[in-house]
Length: 471
View 1 (spheres, helix red, strand yellow):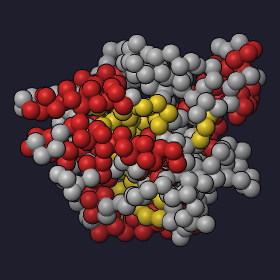
View 2 (view 1 turned 90 degrees about the vertical axis):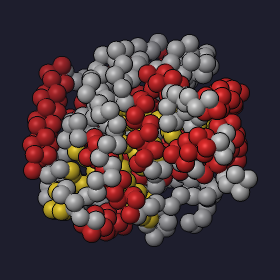
View 3 (view 1 turned 135 degrees about the horizontal axis):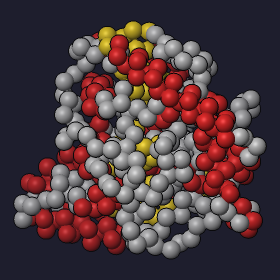
View 4 (view 1 turned 90 degrees about the horizontal axis):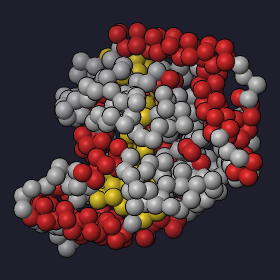
């Protein structure tokens, strides 16, 4: 395998090489670590790297493959975890100066499951403080840059995972999504990101707003995402919101194609303002889906913007976090997060109760929509990537990230599965993604449609970080 770059391969190919003994897990891990060493200084995707632990895990994996007893199909595959996830032996800074470098002594569910499957845990990826916004910068580690143009943001809050996936700094990358935090950076970096049905990928300790948060994969292929979900998409009693019923194989329908699927397409959900080039790339993708056998019907799902509903929950979560801090800690917090918290201070309990009622009505409408349409298609994000270290595009009249990401948080409110699929580039060479969302527990159908599209129209990825390619 001397002519093969192991750092460029997917999980399925690596598993084949491990099984045939054409390449050992240690070489794959060292290839991933070498890519991190090469690329991370430019993009700041990883904030903690455990090279020694990764090599030790890879050696143990090699012994198992040599005995013909791998723990799972991803035994020996290099993975990363978001720095909101506890990993035993690694710090969990959560992007916050209020945290410490102390090493965790317990694995959160995704870390435990991946470790038990033999995956090689490379380290932790960057996130904004407590994952509060849809770009990735914080006062501890600084900003993560977009591999396609390092002057721009990769989105967030799983921006480190998305940048790592785009450059294949590791193969499987765990993200979290409370309002778009997997799908937004997936769209901005041109990778695949999937938010499963709520409760099917357990998490502990709970997220800051646990009823919105979904854990899921960011990968280069849908099959790799399925490989990860087959491990971390299992019940764990520690998550009080965890539910059962996950498919034995999340990819059980992966090769069924698009024939027979009726997809409702909405360019703007009836209320969003979308960048013309983003809108054009997504509309072109509808034609490709149709050519693959899907029925595409342009339609609006029939609800008004749930922005106020989402803010009531999201800002209240920031207020709860802020209220737990003493005065010294509060001075260390991201000012934007503090502003959200202070805005929620005067709200009354009845306002939050009304927001919960509005959330239930939105969920009802979307579930009703999915009785007539198998999937709902929209842009993933309304705009292309913009300048790094900004929450909104400079010069815009927007006040916060939810305004440029109107397509993602509705499906956190409804707790339905949704994915971002790369579908081309703007004239400046910046990635665009479309979103497919399904009814609750229709995860296999969403994955099936995404896979059919990506197999027919494979995305391309940056070979190296581009500092100013599109000036």
